[in-house]
Image (cartoon, rainbow, N blue to C red; front, side):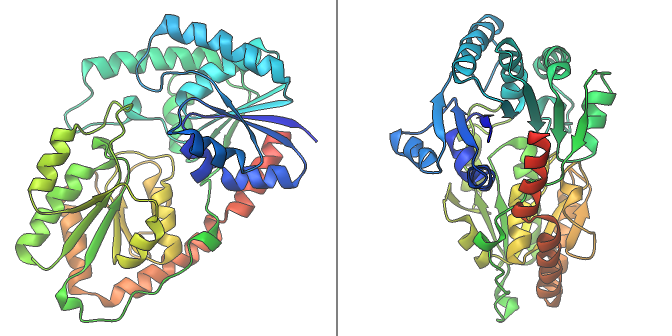
Length: 380
C-alpha cells in the first residue's frame, strides 16, 4: 500500500479524467490525495472527495508566468507535500509538472512521475506564426522544463510526436521517457449508439466538442460549415464547449458572439451530458492544430461516430484515414468541407465508419487496460 499524490489543476479534471485511475488505485488499497488549484464550489470538492480521495487545495496560477509568485507557491506546495510524506507524486498538465516536480524534489519524495498530455499553446503552430509574446513564453517554458524534467523518475507522453518536439529538439536530459498512448475511457459510460435510419436528405448534424480555443480549430469548423451550408442548407453544425479564460488561445466573448451571430452554428454552450449530444450527431469533427490524444474523439468513436480530424500530433493517432473517418490538412476549411460533403452525399458510410471507430475504441481506449499500465508505471 502506497500513499500517492495526484497533482493537477481544476477539480473537474479529477472527476472527468482521473476518476477511473483513482478507483483503480483505491481498489488496490492505496491512499490517494488530490491536489487541486481551482474548483467551482464546495459541492464540486465534495464530489472529488466522494471518489475516496483526500482533496488538498494549493495555489498555482494556470495562466501567465509570474516567477516570484510561482517560486513562493512552489515552496508552499513543497511543505504541503512534505506534511503528507507520500511515496509517489504524479503530476499532470504543464505547470503542475514543472512546479509540482520541483516541490516534490524539495520535499524529498522517493518517486516522482510527470505526464504531459499535450505541449500546449506555445508549442502549437499557428497559421500566422507565433506572436512575440508566445515565443517568449515558449522560451521560458523550455527553460523551466530543462530545470524540472531531469528531476523526474519518468516523464509520460500520450503521442510519439511530443517527446520529439520537446525532449529531443531541446536536448532535455531526462531519466526515462514513456509514450503511454491514450488515457482511455470507461467504455461502459459511452455505449455504442447506431446511427438512426432516416431520410438523410433532410440534413446531417456535424458536432464539434472542445474548449473554445483558436487552436482547437473552431474558426476552421465555422468556415467549413459556411461552405457546406451554401450547398446543403439543411445541414446543422453544433458546437459544445466553454471559453477557457486561463488559456492563451481562448476566444474572447466578442469572438464567440460573432460566430453565433453568423447563424451557421448552434451553440448550446457547455453541457454535462456530452454522450447524449454525440449520440444525436452524425459525424464528429475536430480540426485541431495539436493535441495530446483528444478525449472528445475517443468518446465519439466509442459511441460509434465517424470522425473528421487534422493531420497533426495526437489527432492522427485516432483516425485511420478512410476507415473510421478522414484526416485532412490543418488550417484548411475547404478540405474539411469536402469531407463533410462526402458524408452528406454518401450517408451509407456513416454507419460503417462509425462501427469501425467503435471497434478501434474497444481495442485502443479501454481505461481498464490503460490504468493497469499506468499503475505499473507509477509503482515501478
